[in-house]
Length: 280
Image (cartoon, rainbow, N blue to C red; front, side, top):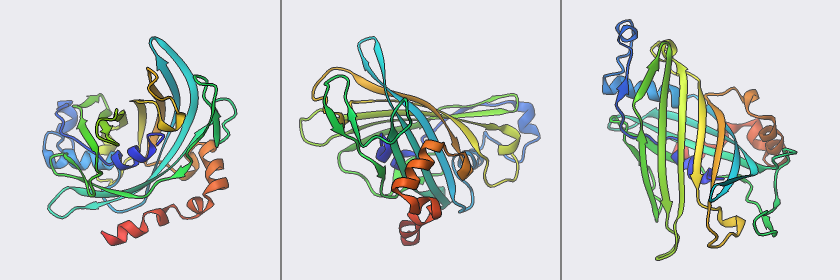
């Protein structure tokens, strides 16, 4: 996308992680977060669902250009991901997801179809809309694996130690990627950090799914469509989001853009996943 296509592939991704836990809470819990199987369940509850219900999530962020120590606001991104999870053969879970994302004007919220690059003064065409569904595997040890490897893509993915503060559980998922388009060419790099926050008591309950708040940050190379060439610098996006969100909680800018350009998604978002889900 926007890191979007990349993020759509990576959103189900997990790595191994230790944790910091509150012993009194664990003594009363139905799950033991020190046990690998229960740790997997806790993460899937916050990231998706232990059953195969449709999960909607969103991110709302502002992109900045960074050259030296100057941080310049550029545009916004409004993204929603729809996903379904189920147990995977051999253990763990598999997830099928699809992302619909839009770059929007930082002042008006309107979808950008063209954008004047302030660094070059040129008008450039802005990519729009959706990305093909993808499938990922979440292994029992919290390992991450793409169902269909992408040629030229390197991925380093990890989940940091779980943190419990009173009745608050925080889990940070971090990915670093490099996409090599041609031998010898400079790769496109995209790194992302998502911190999920939910009530510990909800996660430890018998519920198959627990919504979580998200703090989102990324750092990436200049987007190719910006036509920056070999100019020094990079980009960063900072924002918030929600995992397991109600449809009406997805930001209004995303709703308006999707209604205009992809109205079928609002009518039946699950249809985005059906072909790949049924083929699995």
